[in-house]
Image (tube, rainbow, N blue to C red; front, side):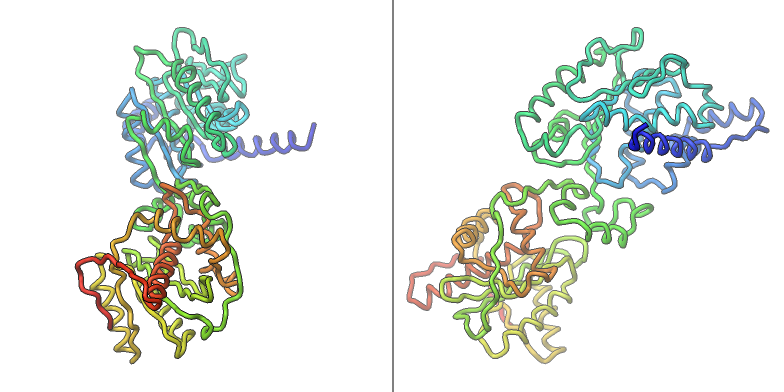
Length: 499
């Protein structure tokens, strides 16, 4: 036996042992007590899950888990797409729901489809193992394994419930369990990174899903269709399914307020730790359902050591303050950009999900770096402008040193267009540089990651490139004004304040 086969067998044995050990039964329970208990559990799906699957329910479910299960169990005819982040138990939750429906005789034929037959068989392993070895299921619902009809890719229980695994592209024609067509269609990990690089492959796979896989269902029988997966690309089968579904459930590792979406299992420190071990692009795709195509606009960023501060003809410190005073939402960005000859140098960068107080501290650090040189301080105007100005003013009173910051009042075009049109040609022609002395600074690394992630319609963070664009635009206009150029600056109606 090959080593890999032996390892797989050992893993299976260990998995089975854990199921058996975690599902003891009460041998002293009377038949009447058993019937009463089963009826009570079947009336409460969460209690049912907790009793029959203690191995999987160690963490209290989040609100989105409860809502998802309620939708599935209350709607026999239902199409749902679960775009849940990694570590949110989308496959496990779905398995418990499906086994509940099958063991309580509400569904009779489950077809599980993945990107390959091997992967579909792997995803079916927990179903088969629990039906075969879960002592509580066997005690309450009878022996499930049917002799001669129990294979890894297809098995039928003694109660006549069928389970079949299928890989994308395989022929599902004639898929029946006696007279019953599949009434549960599960699509799990149907997309792959390699396939999503080729739009023709995605289109072909989706055509097969619509015309072959989904068509295995009966028109007259209520059918549950669930897609489980991450949004790993802008063009993928999950996106196609979302256009047809009754409900699309998109849950990221953190919610809109930057907090863990499942705090009962994933605490903030653990999330921070895992995300710190991944690139920005990888984290966005796997944990925030935000596929990032690196290098679509900025192929790479150039580095060069910064000049002495006194060498720069013009310096601009530009800040994009973001809207929320929190460490878990938008990035606050402050960059110091200098003009040297015909080049633009990002001398220093601060780019972090942090508080306004921390952002203000950055400015005092930059003032020390700039010393006696002249520098313009600008901040993008936002609807919280007055509140931010007050905080800057309070910091100035406390330190005794005023930051002469002004609001950037121009009426800005669309952000992506601004950044691409102004900065991409500079970068491509060797006129935009990041400070090589800061190459290993996490802030400068984040700036590079955000530049590389920039793409049309992308949801990737772009606060850093936006701040650089603001600084370069102001430098160009200041230089043109010095040279006597005719500069027209479109301004918002608010007054420009410095303090």
